[in-house]
Image (cartoon, rainbow, N blue to C red; front, side, top):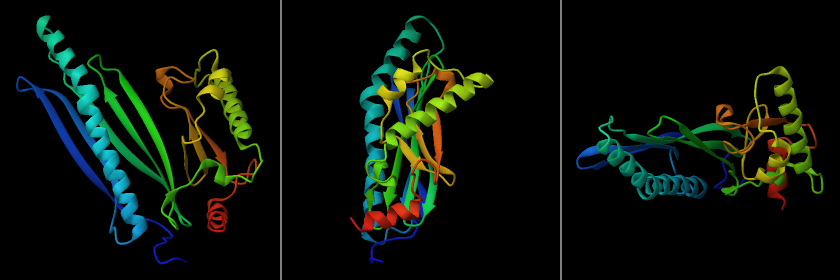
Length: 236
């Protein structure tokens, strides 16, 4: 094993908070929690540390440049109509979902609460090869020319039909077309049960369904076990 490679990654939460005001009245608050390697003692952990520090700073800039003008407009509208003054809230959190065999996987998810009370969820999945310190592409978990995308879409379609028959979820009428159009191979992460892939909020279902997520168990449809994929990556 290379000197900088890791079998697993130890992390601790790093949190940053900001508040923006208009005329000394809070109109927008933001809270960011991202993983921080503990300790960041080698090349791989330092690279991951820089990556999530950049994500933290980028999200706060997004809040200031995109959400703050919306928050100020909502504040002034409420002021003009003598309505309760709103304070919009944005938060970014993370969840580690897999951490063994030289692979570290997680997702970060933001939640933006508007003045109306409605919330927008946005998720990003990351899977890292701790041997080299680089993200792992979804295709790396399947043999070449295995038709992995077709298998994933078929699994999602089967699960959607099962949920609708059971009456536990509701999807858009044209969800089949949306599955193909909105599928993004970057939207995945590993779990103990299998490979989880997801679709953006509103992409294939109403807001009540949140972020639709589907899981392909290890060993099914040519999906390699994470440890097997890590070994294959080392030989490339």
